[in-house]
Image (tube, rainbow, N blue to C red):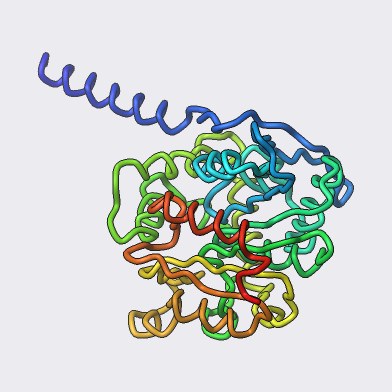
Length: 327
């Protein structure tokens, strides 16, 4: 009996510990501010970090996060940019992180406008843009919509280098929503593990950040937003407009990155035909007027986490030299 009670006690303790780890409010690396936005008749709050350097060089950078992330994972990039003299704005897009997650139509145009309004409120008239994964699609759309605002563009393993509609079966919102409702900490971790050729314990924190909403009472609304934004990526390609980008562009991609939206919907043979980021990035750069590609050896989908110093060095060098880099 004592043995049974002891096992029950240990099991309960483990469950409680795991639950507390997942549900804790993980602190962002810098103070979070909020900007009010009205959209579809709803008053929304857009969270963002605004980090000002000690010795300003007069330039600013805005960072657009990927679909399975938020502003939190930019911490070390923010520090490096600020140290180099840049003012850094790192928002959580509406629908992610600490921002409001409304049930509304999600488009890259709407998200881009939100960020333009945020920058207007901060009196920022010129900006360098860095976008990762889904954030690369947003960064492209933002740059196309506001060409007089954007100075330089960095795309880090951006999604949308191929048109997913051409080879991924269409998914209804209902099916996407049902799948998102089944999400668990384990499923999030398994997916994030695909981002790295070699998984390391220090990557666990990014799973914990993504998994925080699992323990919210309104997780069903979060799951629905996740479905809506998956559909946004699927339905709104940007690659056909790369030719319209006239600003200097740097594509930084991991050599091992083979990320595909809806990869699980393809068989093994089909998967090998898509998602080759080094090849796709070179093809994209050829479409742009002023672009080059850096392939980071041994890296998967997130160079700024896996090889932070390499990413920061390449990004800052480009921001400082891009005006003369490709003349």
